Length: 254
Image 1 (tube, rainbow, N blue to C red):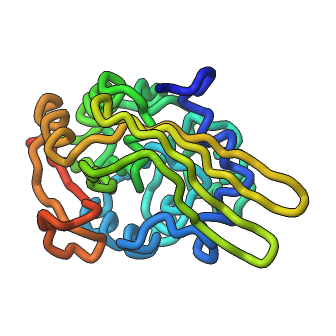
Image 2 (image 1 turned 60 degrees about the horizontal axis):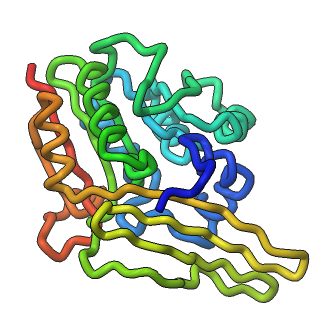
């Protein structure tokens, strides 16, 4: 079930304070085991071939800043003002064009402006309904130049998923764990990441609507895009039935 009061900005607003500590290069909780921000930047630079890039769900710039450091022209959109404030406070953030907005209904962007639209690790799933994900991918097709690419990284859903608790980090004075409830029929994961310390406990809610690669393929096809590549990681390893993640590239026909 959805959390009462949970909106498009909730994840970012609640996680902005800890995001870089947890998920940055030296963070204790890995965001993805399938490629570093530098790996992502190298692939996107190759695919973009000098064109403009839009990252939806730019957050604190974990991917955008390494891409900008390569000389790429980056626009980032995020629903969370707190995330964008954290990003703007960083060195070289002025290289980025930043927009506050919902990626299901992005505004302030010109049609056919971008050679690549990127959605990083699982961020499409932060849109918690199928209709919102459909709308987002439809807008992506509109924003891409003819021949442009939509690139997405996400986990492959596990049909054996179940409710439960997992431990993310155990340290001398801190424990971080996840508690989740999964609705397999609706493809929803509702969870709390809980940080326990001697000073007190903090809770960081999240709510995801996951989709299989085939389901995202269908949404992309409905928007007029075709699957060009699917890899198991940012090193472009072969995607197989046992892959736990995918990096997929869809192309708007020229």
